[in-house]
Image 1 (tube, one colour):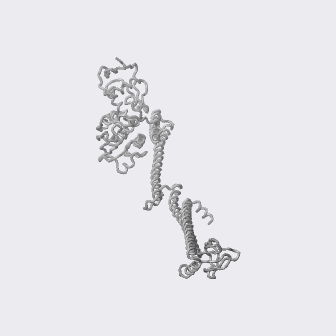
Image 2 (cartoon, each protein chain N blue to C red):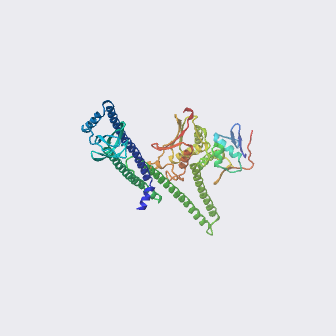
Image 3 (spheres, each protein chain N blue to C red):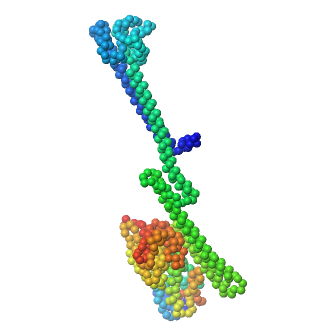
Length: 102
Length: 458
């Protein structure tokens, strides 16, 4: 996806050829965002799929989790992949993105 | 007065007292009647026995010693001074001539006196109602013995009078008791009714005066007072909740209104309009999330939400929640320390419990302040699985501690929020059948959850 590649089997993430170290939950967040790229993902959906709990999280909890991920994925690279959709949630999008599965 | 009597009859206390009085009265009548019949009957039969044995004796004398000795014996009996004023004898020839004794012979058409139970005879020239026994000593020789009934009759009369008097007194006492009991109960009930009527009219602050003695009415009054206390607290809670909802609605609504108003004034640049709309949208979102939370609490409190209770691993849920909050804590410079025994199981709903724990941890992070330490502990004893969440922040005052868990009860009002978090935790804990307690951790606050159902070790 763009210059981002995810190796699901080895849990490895690279961007622009550089390896990015992600914690397990950050990895799961990223995978979920990538699988739902182009659509808005709400915080409740993230809690459901990544932590497997069905309740409405306090807003900032997920925000912090996302901002961590964003720091690692987007900070040193262009273009930004993770976008905040005000009042709704997040969306990962870039043209021509694809998950590389091996 | 007429109305008064009807009231009296409608009173349960009066009817009860009358019923009891009537029963006692009836019982007394039966006992006295039996006593009377037995006593009088016994005395009659004893008198009969006496007469019979006298006859027998005289008969024997006649057969063994002849007529003269009988006459002599009768004379002796009449003069011996024993029962002389009540006993009577008559020895005579049939239809006629008296041979001995103190009674006049019967009228001529009558052969003898026979065995009359009560008969008016002339004894010593005076009339006397007597009991009579008659036998034939031989053909033509009649012997009658008699015993005056006056003594027995006067005893009879005395007994009847005593019984009547006793019955009257009993009736009077029963009636008096009924009225007094009715008055007493009426007074006790009136005290309670006065208060309940005032409560009906809307004055919830009224309480019944309870006197120290521990009778049924004081206990009832005590219970009613307890009920009123609870209702008053609940009413205040509801009032507080609706006030707060109104307040929470009014402020954002007026802000939205003002912003949109301003945006609509002619000549505003497009950017201002855009900003106003975004602002309005944010406020509306805040409002809908507030109502969403209120609805969730209401659902949990009324038990409308379906609860999926199962044996779940509380340790895992705690670790998940810590995992969720770790980054947030780190960002605020708060350390989360966990001391969680593995494999703690209890019966609960995974999502509800997760939500409650997230809420509690959220609160701890929010109120403990920067560079605080939040400790999570979980362990089990013989009966319960315990979870503690403790921070070393500023904690709460004693007054706040008591109100924790009430809707719209805010800790530090400088920290944004609606005051719904703990209310929802409390509703969830109630739904799960778990206990929730708040304590001073000095410093800070300690929240302790107790989950029943450590079934494996029970």
